[in-house]
Image (spheres, rainbow, N blue to C red):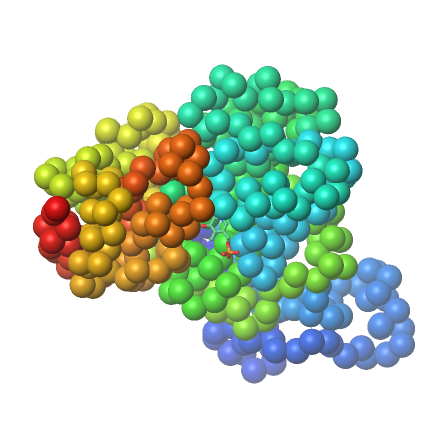
Length: 389
Ligand SMILES: *Cc1c(COP(=O)(O)O)cnc(C)c1O
């Protein structure tokens, strides 16, 4: 089956009612036919659900779909994207281990590395995304895991997946990839040699801004360790959210095509606009890593960033002038969302710290939605005109 078909046709075990859409299995536990049946299930001599903290037919269906889409052997579903970052960290990192992390990863991932892992004696080095040549020297003999995100949020810088996989393989280090911005529709990091891929299903996978969820997929033996940690620490995905996202995966490929098509048009529009200082979009020839983006990403993704000429104040005026696009912290929704990192998500950083992760004062991130493209562009255009100083 092609992944597009697997996303639609992968099913949980059929119930006697032969329902066409998968049911929601809102149950915390399952019954045993006999004492012997219970014993065999617990002894893992038989397969079957026991307790929803570690198995639920609807959750398992969702995991099976994502595994096919990411070309993964196995996976574990969890309650949020951050749990899909922390659960593998908790499962794989021991006291004395070293984590090598791209400097440009999701804010909460940085917080885990800076504030939580040191409590267990796990040190992190941050590698500059714009300087790949610095990376080899940052590995240590005790480096256990490399954590990256490509394209990065919000600056849309890329990491060459083939290059980083090779670097990790040569050193026997596991590679963990946050693939939230790209989705498996745009790139499949496991095909390049990554060991683990995580998703916040909150974003494009749900795609409609309704639920939180996360998933980690990858090599079977690594996922075994993640599963053990998740089973006993309990970050389980709710059966309702699993059902919601599993249904959404059926449309992920067609939705991503539209997100990416419209994002490219938005990027092209902004590139010619008099109020815009620069635009960044992976499949725009002006992107500094355009060649890599073309090689590694099937499409450019659903996110566009740009910088207004007038800096912080014009950035804020632009957001206030929007009439249709939403101001929200989410992304990957049917509705176009604009954010201004310098005054919101990254406001606690200094100008220098923001600049280091590619955020200038007038920097705006657009998560391009599924509205008719002309309406999106018209709203951006009128807000840019209105934002003039
Ligand atoms: C949102 C996001 C996360 C965290 O996911 P939650 O579901 O909010 O916990 C991690 N990485 C990236 C790139 C994200 O956009």
